[in-house]
Length: 86
Image 1 (cartoon, rainbow, N blue to C red):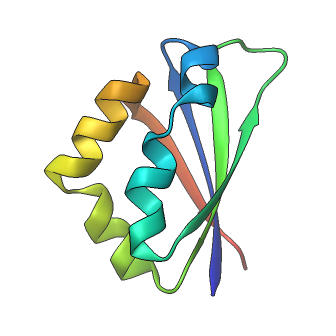
Image 2 (tube, rainbow, N blue to C red; image 1 turned 90 degrees about the horizontal axis):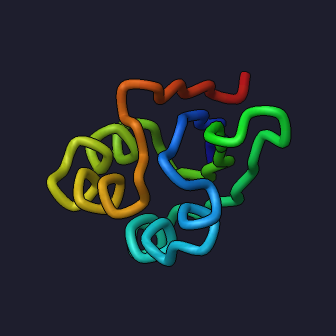
């Protein structure tokens, strides 16, 4: 399994934290997700995602379902940064 950290900004942190979309999206793909918020920047959030392989994660993030989930969660896709455990 590969561990990936993902950082991005959202429109509303409280909405993002409560949203079921991450589990609905990542769960069926066999990925687990833990969420984090930045206490100093109210719109910055992060995830730790455990995935079987990067290709599956990258392919899944380029789907219309991912775009819909991000839109629902208020994710600002242009701010997304991914770091892979070394």
